[in-house]
Length: 95
Length: 248
Image (cartoon, each protein chain N blue to C red):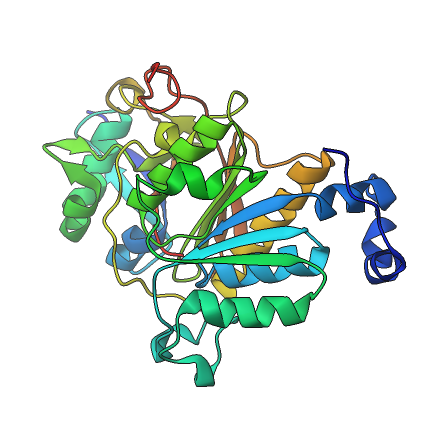
């Protein structure tokens, strides 16, 4: 069975939902970025409507895996390993 | 059109910045001959317009549709208590022409929309995004692509901000990065956040106008004031972007 710890770095209202900047989440249901994000949302359900729409990550959420930008389909296909870091940036609209 | 000559006032006023490597009299003349469109006179627009004015950008076109509200004053530093209830462009205009009487400030008091955005930005050398919503940002983005002029994007939330420099043909456009608009909201914000982001935007604009340094092209800079960290996200054009890749 897969079991790993993934560190999430959260920004703007994602951070407000978690009340902290960094969150370590145990992931056991799969090994893709998408699986890791689902484990995060299981812990913080309030984040789901901010981040997901129709079962998919909203297009305007920026994702970095270990500092590298991840796009579109890579979120469902790219694998993560124990100790990886995923940063999630919602866009912000204020001016 | 050749860059305008400097006079004695200019040479004294801008002496300290003309000493910057790559700047000189030639750079100052470029700024004097330049026009910046400042879309919004709020949190971001205040430091952007202030610093472009002090740097001697010869013509500023400023646009806003709102009136000054008391709740604006924690961050919108061009507006003061006795301006509450006034049009923001009037309040901003009156400060800017005193901050630098040698430049031209042209106010547009109204809503930037699909009918006027191309006309408003015509003849401008750079578009400064200081809006509070993505609908208008998308219009500015289209104008930037249409006129082939750079747009300096900025947005803020709480103690966080985002900023990048969008140059048609060289970088992604705004719709490549954010194909869907996040909702407009009444957002939390500390006044220093638009101060940080707006001054970075003004710095980028001046560099773009002068052609010095390296800009934020293809990089989205994320400012995290809560932990005082800066992050960079690599950004790239979307080959299927409806704004910049598909023929209109």
